[in-house]
Image 1 (cartoon, one colour):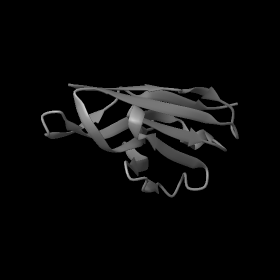
Image 2 (spheres, rainbow, N blue to C red; image 1 turned 30 degrees about the horizontal axis):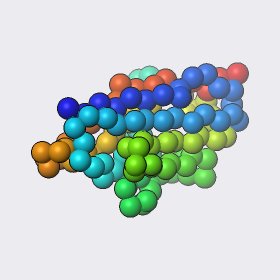
Image 3 (tube, rainbow, N blue to C red; image 1 turned 90 degrees about the vertical axis):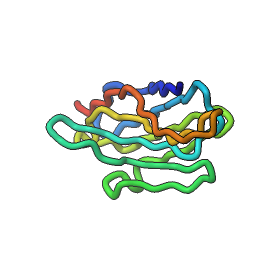
Image 4 (spheres, rainbow, N blue to C red; image 1 turned 180 degrees about the vertical axis):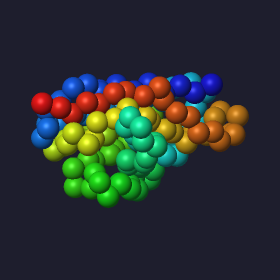
Length: 120
């Protein structure tokens, strides 16, 4: 009923920048919140940043001051701007959305993930 499609991952050198995008589509009435998670090899998935449709944001301590998150409500899209990237930011980044369907039921949906590799 709802699909999330992420883009923007890739290989970047330490200190570089990347911008991830995630678009929600399907039987959507509205999207109340979107966020990014990441999972590095051998580690558990962790929250990176989140944003609500009202503009409230939250960030993991490890990315504060380096990452920003924004949401375009009209396009059901969330962006993660990642600056000053470090090798420890290497992970698969997943988008998550809290969506109210046209049926008015609420669901949480995950994207398929996009790989970010920070290496020289």
